[in-house]
Image 1 (cartoon, rainbow, N blue to C red):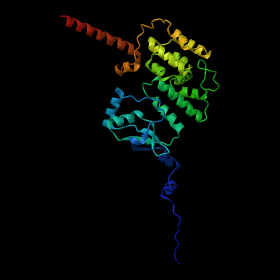
Image 2 (image 1 turned 90 degrees about the vertical axis):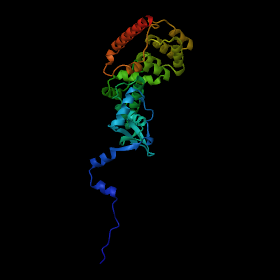
Image 3 (image 1 turned 45 degrees about the horizontal axis):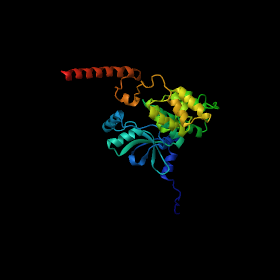
Image 4 (image 1 turned 45 degrees about the vertical axis):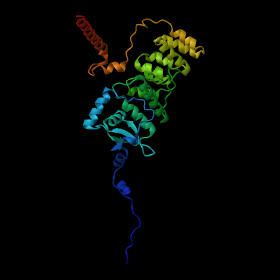
Length: 316
């Protein structure tokens, strides 16, 4: 009697599944590290954190050239087969500048909202974050939480109507160094025109005046930008409060903005504004931010002595 052979066979991948644990299968699916060509990696859409070719980047490039990428970047694979960078934008840029063709990455299985939350949280570890970066990061983080079913009503005095639910804002505040109110202020900054937001990043406009300006429409905000450029003066908190009040009453015209901005403010003309990012590049990294003013003053004293010494030498 001829032995009958079965036509039924299991695919190899199914056999692997049968003889592995669920944890092992999950690990194999969710965590894969590989070298991925840079041309196949897309930046995260509307990534709020800027990648600067500054001194820190130069040091990172040198490190990558010597030791490679020690901590893999994090990517997720998209439906079209390409990869989306979740964290590691500076490492990717360093590899580009170093002349590398690939980036060491961990491929994770995340949907867009999960990736957004991971992207924001991983970038909070940076030593220096601009107000504009925090603003859009907080906004993206809370919008992702909202899509995941959490309440994200963000309006609260002095920022708008009374808060109806604070769960997600409080959760985010617990995970950051900023209070609930400060997070709400940062998110208001996303309503500013780019020029005003740049002034906030540069330290020319403080947070509270910027929040008040965020309630103006685009035309009114651009009128404010024109007045700042014309008078080389930024509005005080009191002035922005009045602008917002006039706007809400339908009385904020170009002429009203000009009148408010033309008011003399104490020491406005004498005030010296230094761009924080530019100053920090010239200060050794071991100098705390709290000692920045003392360092700058001492540096100016030494430079002044040098100029006097050179003038005395030239007069001989």
